[in-house]
Amino acid sequence: MMNPIRYAFIGLLLCSCISLSDVGPTVKHVLEYIYTRFNSSHYEVAGLLDGELVDFYSSALKSPVPKKSWNEENTSFGYNEWQKSLSARQDVNTYFLSSAVDLKRHFVKHPGGDIVQMKLGCALDITITESKKMEKEVGFAEFAYDGNTVLRLSDNSSMWIPKDEYAQDIHDIVHKWNTQSMKDHLTNFVNVDCPVALDRFRLLERTNSSAPKVYTVPSGSLKPGLINLTCLITGSYPKSSPIEMNLFRDNTLLTEMEGVHSSGVRPNEDHTYQLRKTVRLDTSESVVYRCYVNHKSFPKPRNYTWEMKKQEERSNLPYIGGVCFVCLLAVVLFFKNRWRSEPDRHLAAPNPEENTALGAQDGGSLIDQGGDATSVDLSSEREVLTNAPDAEDENDEAYGSRGSSDSDLSQIQIT
Image (cartoon, rainbow, N blue to C red; front, side, top):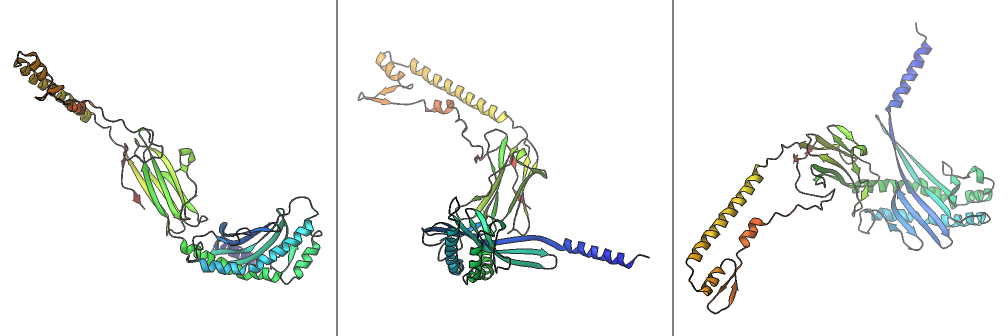
């Protein structure tokens, strides 16, 4: 009989395994503001949501500059929410400037620059399990001098804590800041105002984030027998939204080693983003190419397929027939003109002047009764028959858009 303790141990082990497997990935969202004081008359503030600029302020500009499509104008649907966040930061701005003066005075004896920075904000960690969604909000703040962090706010946002190497050096500053009532404005912002702004800004991002469009474009190539196939997704927003795009050849993933060229994520004029990937194909092969695209706005991943059908070598009979027809027509016209000229010479009057006038009809000039010369051009038909066709355009770019190709492209299918 098995020991009851062993049963209990096995039960705890199974429960721990189940609980670990139940925990999903954690998603992190951050709203932060980076203050930089360059000197007594100039400082800047950059507000970032998940690494992207929300607004920017410089003491030289006198007013914050919006950086999102939802706050760029006073008619934008998120403008009022953005203005509320600016108002909540007024006390923080004052606190930073006074604190920067304290650090500058203290470190003035140290060699180097005099740049004081403060970073503060809040982070939201979202963990999704099979049974529930867990959220954890954390406020943070820290000061740096010449790029080195010297002190930070404690996890419960109640005390300033110096870094070990600066503990003795800035002891007086830490004591002063921890006893100031102005610290309450800072802790209130990172624990109350910032989380509210983070939730509102995230909602504005989702509201403004429409599903991007996907295009598949075949185009010409400089080399005969080859075409370029491009898969393009455009209208993605924001930039931090991951775009997954892969090209397959008969279900085999293609990489840069197989000639795939990626543009990387690039901005559009409307503040959205795009990504394109291109691969060069041999039209003599019968294969199926597939573009796999996934985006957070799609209910499920999308697949776009191209089917390349190998064509039989084109027959030369139409070209041979065309050449023969042109040659035959030229011969007929030649003998016809010759037949018409023979009677003219036979019936010509013995008068040399009349012979000259009649002979001029074969592509020369006719002398009318008034003596004026009238030019007659009879060579237009010959030019039509003898002019060679224009050469094909040789300036086609590698990623151009030549309309014709040597392949039979079936209609693009979306699955």
